[in-house]
Amino acid sequence: MTEPRRVLIDADYAADGIWWVPTKEEREAPIPSYLTPEHLQPWPLSPELRHDLKAWNQSWEASDGFWNSAEARRAWQEQGRELAIRAQNEFGTDRWEVLYWLGDRLHRVHPPGSWPAETWEQDLLGYPSRERDMSVAAVVFTCQPKIVAAPSWAAWGSASRWPG
Image 1 (tube, rainbow, N blue to C red):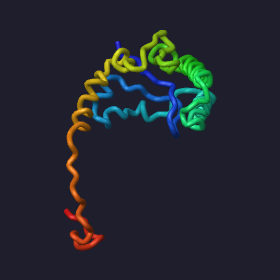
Image 2 (cartoon, helix red, strand yellow):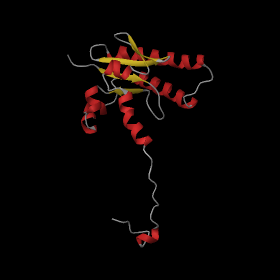
Image 3 (tube, rainbow, N blue to C red):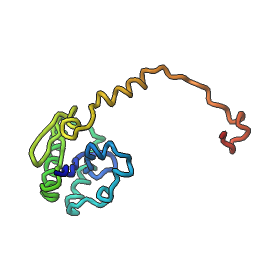
Image 4 (cartoon, rainbow, N blue to C red):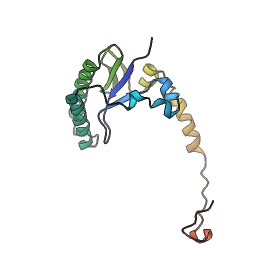
């Protein structure tokens, strides 16, 4: 059985409010093989829903991702849930799974399910543990940096000539 296409209803700056969620295989593949023609096509959603997703994303941008209260944040996430349900209805359930955030959990419209924010990528998608990924960063950031002086332009002879 082929893994379903997954999308996430979520906001970010200058975004559309909907994101591809790469499979484990796509995530581990080189970038050119991840950007298939399917990923480069417009979303197979109605113009109305694409507009509503964009407007929802822009409401997040206007707040800089911060809300005046927990209730305001929850109301915004509820709007995201409603958009996710609409997207699932338009995508259908044969090949698509639509994900969204509510509280501190990631939810799936169909089939229903939810995962903790900290582990959903491992639990649902089979991605490697973030702890394992962060172990490399820990090594990098705990090494003593070596600071060297940058050469002056005069040492190169002229500002128009790069060393090399």
